[in-house]
Length: 488
Image 1 (cartoon, rainbow, N blue to C red):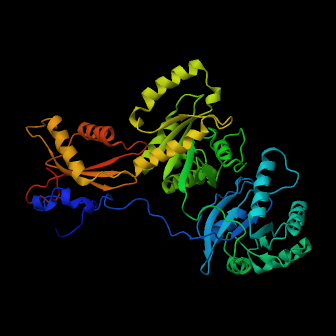
Image 2 (tube, rainbow, N blue to C red):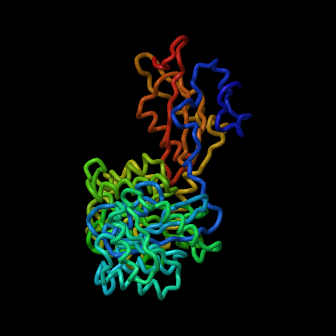
Image 3 (cartoon, helix red, strand yellow):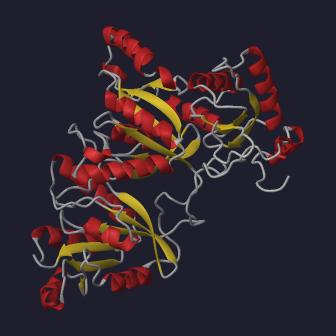
């Protein structure tokens, strides 16, 4: 056969020959089904050096990080304290790859949530190979800047002092006053406009060691897991429980997490790359400010993940937003595990009503594994790894074409399509166009009813599994002679 090669060419000896249909179908043209699974950028093959960007709140650390990585990835707003966790991003300069870590504002003697944010910044300093201390060059050094300088002097790590917000040469004299911090020559930079960023990156690369002391996640290998859900359902608490450290800042105030937070964790004897995401409160189109950009980051984390763990608050009714998040994951084609968190707060009455809500609101995704967990107490957290493995196995399942078409023949004989308008469309043959998620194309004599397509999907699940994975079905009606549109 000339033209496109069917994706299941390994099973071609058992498949019906599409050429026998004399070009009446457009085989896997441009609907995306012929494309392989998730395409990812090239990753470094080994550990890369880590550069930590630190400083007091609202000096422009996240703006500088965006300038370094060359895209608007870190959430930026004029309000101090938007960044709360340490967040790693891949970067490179002059062919040298490294990881840049954005941190929350560091303050000595901080209390409450500010103390947790400061602790994340200190952890980033300790793990880094090079530290970039950002100071507001217009305001000048403050007591907090001086305290940070003393900590870095004792740390023994290479430190670069950046005087940010120096937008023109007239302000460079203000930056010279920062010599008093004892960290060497201050480098005048405008992270917002890019002024001096190239000189900064040259210095950063010059100070990077050949052998990094530690590596942040991102070198590839571990399966990628996104933890998503509404605000305050316990995503960060679960991340901390799984990593066995205070990796993410946790607070009773909803919306503590803004940037996605990556961590490596060993769960069930396997290393996973976990991404804690910002809570999705509303549609991206109706969000504003920090919430808007946080929603974009969360959506990107879902797209980059292989399996998504959607957390629902078991102590509260399943909301419309919970269902919207589940739909988003399904449409993204990711493997899915549903975790009902805060199970320690659920009494007998709540269990009764929750069972009714699941039956009513989650009937369309009965294929996803469900767990009842408590991130606070650790209840059933160890069951997450087997559930994620099951979902990933379903996500990667491939059915040989010969077996698939034997199954289609038996299905059509046992349950033919209803007659519509004097016609009875039939499925002539089928092929699996790809995996991650499983994608099938049904070649038919006419358009199929939506209800019949759902029936085919249900039977696919019953007979082949696909536990924890969405299934994408595409119907290709046979064209009439001389009909280029393919419509009847």
